Length: 296
Image (cartoon, rainbow, N blue to C red; front, side):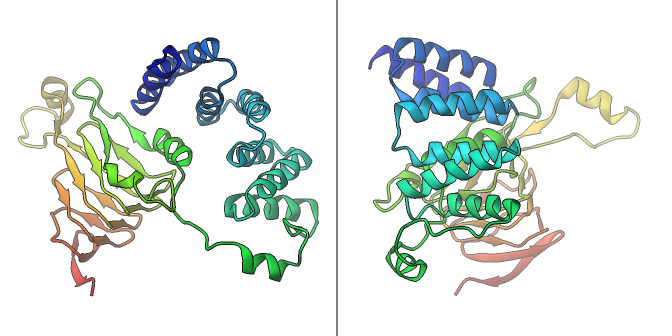
């Protein structure tokens, strides 16, 4: 393994662990080692975006675009950033470039439509032929995330709520990356919250919807003679690991500490609070959640 690859591996782990500043330093070292490699610039720009440093993220993505002018995701990210800063003409150009490079890029098309609405324009077709002909030629949209998108989402979702007690790991099943027609087979909302006091394992084809909160810790609540906050000062918190199986759908719900496993095929409805382990392929809903059906 080259020095660059070692630095990238180190930086990626630091980023996954939520140690953003250390990850940034490692990515910068990787760039010094191999200034013509695009991956370090891309990941560094994602971290800057995550931290709200939009100008820095734009500058770094533009450098990445110079190294990889065929990188559709780079231009899409630039479109998002320019749009966030109100620089609509620049955003329009970057979204168009992303669509030119990847005609079926649904996220870039959505971005372009949003820009055109702001500018009072009709969003153009991304290709010279008619819209109807183009729609017939574009493959069905993949709803799952690319590897880069997944990394960016997980950087936002990780929560280290009690690092003084324990820092857990987020473990992704290798099956997530082994489908030939897509980079990953999962979808995780950017505003989901993954409490990594304990470990969380996520299986293939899982969807974690917007607003979902997965907790791996709880507090001590027993007794009246000692204030609960003081008990926490003395004992810390309780924690345990959690396993999410294959083909699980979590729709904007809360998964409490005492749930240790969500088996294959389980569906948990929106606004539900899951307090017990379901059985495979059951559908749960409510607060507290209870079994309301089975997947046929």
